Image (cartoon, rainbow over all chains, first blue to last red; front, side, top):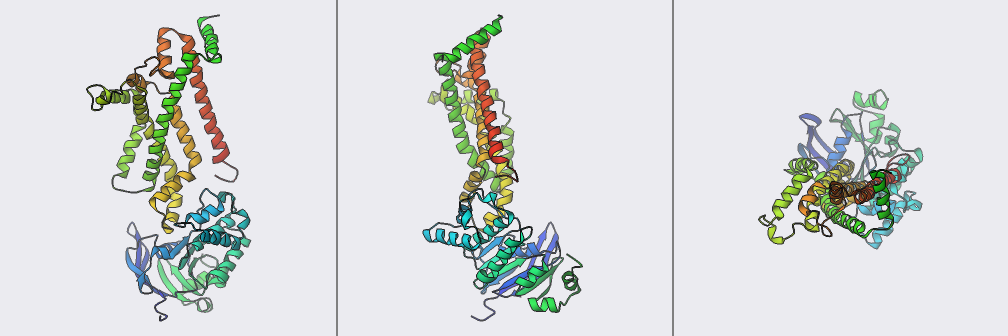
Length: 233
Length: 237
């Protein structure tokens, strides 16, 4: 397999709502592994882009392919900024997303909860968890389906610092080596810690795409420079 | 002591000494209500959940019709069911007119839209929260409808209780299709109407008190559920 085969290729991707273009003809070739962080000001189109990658929105035009094939929904897991928690126990929340529950998957679910520091709460009503614990549960639930691509929309916004640290540590140490991760954040420092490559979006256009190191050392556009310096957010 | 207070004392006697006629009427009332609410819930809750979580061509039309049916006049429903089940009606051959079965049919027509529409309203808001999550994990329609029902179980309990309250206090439709026949189709509401018109206030008052107690208990239970499960410090459980 050539490096190009493992890439995620986006061709002429556009998205409109009621005639208003929220993502303009975007063509990109993204690395098929590691963490790609989507950066941009509020309303730039990061979440739209992520949801298009997740298959949750239908583009007006364009294609997304991986290994020269159209991406399938079953290869992707999406975690939103607002954790969606079902009214049942933590463990049952984990198992809900599985088409069938085997003994092995039950063990895997418990293992993932342990990694997320939730093993002692597996029989607790998930709605009583803290915001950070809920988001950790959502991340563990996304992993259990064994996706090839993990799409995270500001998963650490509005949660306590220890949960943020745990999530970042988990993504870097346990997930990055097995799966492609797309991560939306507003936190420049978090982007520096996590990103292998950066996609910078401004008013519905991808205006910069480079390695994390290049982006932070030598941003090419004035919008990216302003964003990094904190002049726009 | 005036007539009303005498009747009141006499009615208390009927209740305390478990008068056979009173018990028979109460039991039939509860039986009809039980079956009517059971059938309406089994049909109405999944239908409401499906309509709230699925978009298809005539969905809005169906929902509008169901919401309109929430305000069906009971006597009109009674008349319609009467015509259908009367000897010359399309289902007259079944010979069900003036039986508890046809009273249940009339009750279902009245309660089903209420249960369906209240379920729709509850699950519509849940669907707004869950839809993206269900789609991202490719949850099947059947599994998602079950999840909506399971996750709104406490709210749906209040819907069922509202259905019970509506059913047990209904009189217009069941008096037409049931005929208020002694020992066969006489229930609390129809008996109260009849006994009051006859001036037999003690039985009417006794039944009235039971009916009132049932309504108060049901509402109390709804409030208890709301307090216990639906509103807790820090959010909804």
